[in-house]
Amino acid sequence: MSAPSSDGAGPTHRSAPTIRFQPDTYAKLGANVAAPARVVAITGGSAGIGRATALRLARDRSALAICGRRRDRLEAVAAEIAAAGGEALPVVADVTSEADMLAFVAQAVERFGRIDVMMCNAGFGIAGAIDDISPEQMHKLIDVNYMGTYYAARAALAVFRRQGHGHLVIISSIVGKRGVPYMSACAPRSPARPSMSPWYIQSPPTVNSST
Image 1 (cartoon, rainbow, N blue to C red):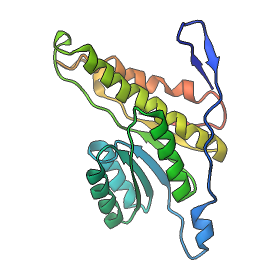
Image 2: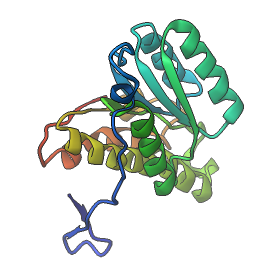
Image 3: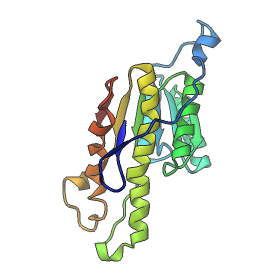
């Protein structure tokens, strides 16, 4: 993969961090233990769209690796996933940390043996006029919504390429396509998140991306 250099001179090629994989957990347990229908990793899985998606997938006997910053909420959603028929791995992690996203993906692979889908969902919005929003608030929004998506997707792609398959789902906002009063601070990052997708999937295997 390549990424733009900071001076704008062109792409800088860097090798992806190494992730150590464990053998398939279910294969080690024997034929009497059924593997999950799919393994889905969700950032921002403790509330909102992330939680609702996890609970719906749990009804189809999926395994869900969910991450967020609040342990109590993650554990509560993990219990709901189990009650709905799924299997949960709650991981306390911050999407603004590359190390946390690498660890999140590695723990999911160690537990379930694979990842079929990475859903980059973590994000937040800021309501207010542009001149009422501080540069510090905007930097935080970009770190979470844009860089958080980048870190999670980049970590998952190492797994997808090793497996030969994978789906990347990026959640965005309508404000990138339609003006909403006092939400203009969110507009630039909303189309930016899905526009990452072609950059990520230039090399085989094919990774499907949707928003």
